[in-house]
Image (tube, rainbow, N blue to C red):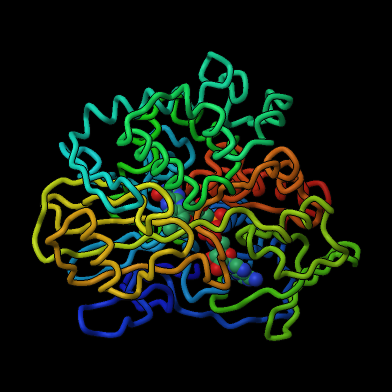
Length: 488
Ligand SMILES: Cc1cc2nc3c(=O)[nH]c(=O)nc-3n(C[C@H](O)[C@H](O)[C@H](O)COP(=O)(O)OP(=O)(O)OC[C@H]3O[C@@H](n4cnc5c(N)ncnc54)[C@H](O)[C@@H]3O)c2cc1C
């Protein structure tokens, strides 16, 4: 099996590390499989999977365990896609997807299956928090617990479109079109539109308004005028229509052993899967009967009975499909979902204990908190590309708005927004995209199938959603192969 036994930390080309008085260096060490395999392109595969993030990996495992001949093709020099755990200075830094929760059914199953555990990001339970007001010029220190409750009430009003906390819009968040008419109605709104509707009724203090706007901008990682309001209602429903519960599910507990350990465990479970790294798919030709021709950027051609495309939505347009995909897929692929923002890790010169901070858009940092026990590691998020993460002095200056005396020793991160194989962080649709495009994106066009965290039904935009979508496609492919071919 490709990858078995490979568990040493190696350097991937993704990510950067920036030390004081030094230029940022590209590439971070991570525990992922990076040994390339040779392509033998005379073989025909039952399934060619494009992309080795969690959706591609879980589909490879499921199909290979059913004796299907699987080829997994990944453009990067590592598996894991939008997740990887960088190992540096004795610590584990999650550069992409990080936090999970026991109420995320697909990811929790894998945690149980591989005997992994979770660890809490400590700053989420801080006693005090720093809030920036007046366009980032005024710093206020407040207690977290009381204000979090008040913020929760403001969030309830913001979300409560029907006097039952949006339950008539998202009664079953894993079946998001249960109330299609209502979804369509609210999908016309941006998050800003909804804020403008309720701004006066919210009757908030400056702090609570700043926190609410910071949290909304943090969730979609940008200007809330561009984010679809229905995606907020989806998170709200997945968070049990409660802000504290929602935040616990989004940003509090991470895999202790690291997301790369989970990705590697799934790969290790695959049977006879061939994995090609640093290999990009250029086109998928399904004009022939009974086989699909996948052309690599190198020009090599590979034959498959089926193809599963798991690339991020914002790079789907880079693959040529013959014949062209369904028009609604083409439409959203051309326009793209929201691109997201920045996420960085900063090591401070001294511990500051448990700490949490928020500032509304367009502050370059909308949310930051300490992650470790003593509070010397901060994770921060910002909208769009407003923070030059690779410039340690800029990161320190922005953190000093909240913590005037701290010094930053080093910064780690990765610019997912401009990564040519990704072009986004987590999924957040623009107004109208969910009701117009999601179902089309999920629909297979046999022998070509689609899976991604960006097109999941439930936890879209999460590791859980990637697993859900990969599992669903693996089932569809298995049924298709059973119907059209016998096992090889
Ligand atoms: C900064 C950040 C923070 C996040 N935080 C969280 C979090 O806390 N919790 C959470 O659950 N989720 C989080 N997410 C989201 C989560 O990481 C993703 O939803 C999930 O990992 C997506 O998995 P995927 O398999 O669908 O796609 P990906 O992981 O993007 O995998 C797709 C793969 O396709 C490859 N590819 C692209 N084009 C080609 C091509 N032409 N040929 C071959 N390969 C190609 C890409 O290189 C990539 O590896 C975060 C994401 C980011 C970026």
